[in-house]
Length: 135
Image (cartoon, rainbow, N blue to C red):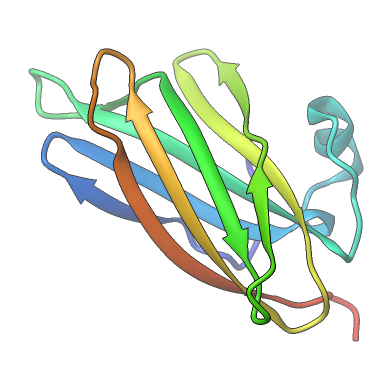
């Protein structure tokens, strides 16, 4: 799952876990990729991509299944729950959610990821300003 986007993936570390995240406008996806994942390509829809990795005995981080919940808040404090879908490709596991946005809108995301077998969620907060790519 590659987006060729200018949005660099970011990550946060929680002990032996890392949560990687990125947010981008759905038009960054090729029509084929969007169709494959059932994502609407629109200048008003953003995609949130989250993956949870755990440090293995060999010291490398490997994807693990997790339960994801999330909320997005806009600049006038309107909230919307995020509906994450799990995507598994080979060893890769990631979670996608779509959000609607207005041009130049700053959205704040509060994500809670609970790795399989764990009771404590890994809490992540980040913001993203979304722009329509063609001005």
